[in-house]
Image (cartoon, rainbow, N blue to C red; front, top):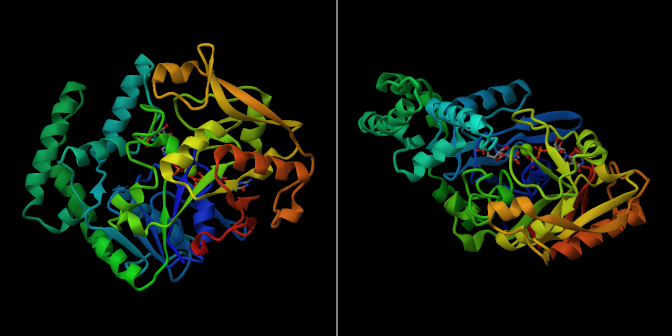
Length: 432
Ligand code: GDP
Ligand code: IMO
Ligand code: MG
């Protein structure tokens, strides 16, 4: 028996929510350890769809503890709205089943505004990132800049005013520079006091909770958001998010030591998608890209933006297998490939006349690479809803085997529809 860390191995939206929900039946605790409400995770349970952004996907299962770790940037308004929305769907969120790290950083309205202002300004010069405009980047900047307001600060009215002054000195200087109106001390104090009573009941010393539970033998499931190619260090910088999304962050972002992390499950889509700007060597701007987008319903859960689609990039996922220490993958959305005559998988790139086996780190080179493909025969049969290998056509099995070989990691789970139970179990990560 072990703990399990779930991470996205591409540019996000790999189907982490569905797999975390499926795995959480076997877990006692589900922990988010980075990102914020830039994430959008869709779960489908008996035809009912649940859309989660900030809350760990395990929240929909009764009897589990959902934890928002210190590595998350937390917008209290988004949290309260999501709790209310889930409540309307019959999922009760209380301090019994949700705990929020007292040392998690808060996203304030000034972070959201700054995110939008900077994206607007960058749009004019063609340099925008295409962020979700949720204030994620500005909040992480303040955390690292040691001027952030954290959950525990809401309970300390003696030190809070000084902290508000400190964060405002920085933000108002920026706002003046951008020609925007300054924010008053009173406005921030009002924003914080208006939510304090509703957020503080969820407050928890998360490192201690996890330590106690681990010693008792509880099974802990860590739920990553975004994907490894959006990681602030290992991703396609600067077209990335502002947190470390790789598995190592499960430790720093929760307060549980890395030795106890256990099985690292990389959620991997059978093709590739990306939302927002940035390099995407296997992107398909033709009818096949359109086919994948339409069949896979590739529209962002958070912003509704159309996701860019392309062939599976084994060179990139191989890198994610290394940077995360992936033990096995959950391969999702295989069913979306049904009906294509042939399928391509990228195995490396041509750069300035030379073949290379991984994406270079420089932005200029990333924009210049041309993918090198292997081509496989497609299949005409439907794999939708397949629940065992025996239900898969031979060519689909060949495709899966080729993916495993090229990325250097085995398939532990295979997903064939959005529904919770349309999942083929090869290896149980908790028992590995
Ligand atoms: P996440 O951000 O990684 O949790 O992924 P999203 O929820 O943003 O996007 C994945 C989408 O694909 C969701 O709408 C899921 O319901 C859906 N999905 C997940 N697994 C499968 C699958 O195996 N087949 C199909 N067709 N859809 C899936
Ligand atoms: P889930 O958890 C896909 C992308 C944004 C943008 C970049 C930076 O659903 O997989 P940010 O708002 O984080 O500063 O935006 O990262 N991005 C995601 N793309 N899935 C996500 O989350 C994402 N979260 C952020 O589109 O390109
Ligand atoms: Mg998503």
